[in-house]
Image 1 (cartoon, each protein chain N blue to C red):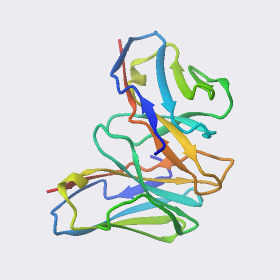
Image 2 (image 1 turned 60 degrees about the vertical axis):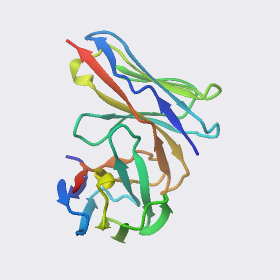
Image 3 (image 1 turned 90 degrees about the horizontal axis):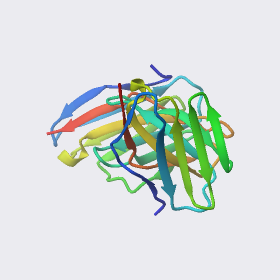
Length: 113
Length: 113
């Protein structure tokens, strides 16, 4: 297991539900990321937070709402999702340069019914 | 739109052979390149990164970068069944603590005993 944890690991929700994904990193990193991984598609960057400020929003629908209360925690709030939002949602964190590795969490497998 | 292209495979090699994985990228200004390995059902983990033209070796892995031709490759010597996974090429954009990675779709490698 890496220093980045995600809960829950699996989530099934209806289109009218509201749920949240949680990510926590214990590595002292300054930046945190949300990615979406769908079958047969590249990892898609959704949001980037640097020092708790959002610095990137990659044209993600408003039904996905991120929150970064501190440098160790990142949330992704979900509401009125669509079946095509079913995917693996990965959280990652990284230190400042010159260290360049992004460390990934285990992911949350989301199924929207 | 910055793009990272990989042959999706599957690439099948016998145990003990050399596996060669290739990646091309569209942004000529890209400076840093990463290879991640992702086992089925798991999150990506970094294998190697490379910044300079030429070869970089780490154990059985060699990364090769040619910025003029905008390609980066990963060679795996003495391939083992445990190397069977999807290999993701990623290109870095930005710097400091809020850089981001653009990923290719990945190449599925199967090493046959």
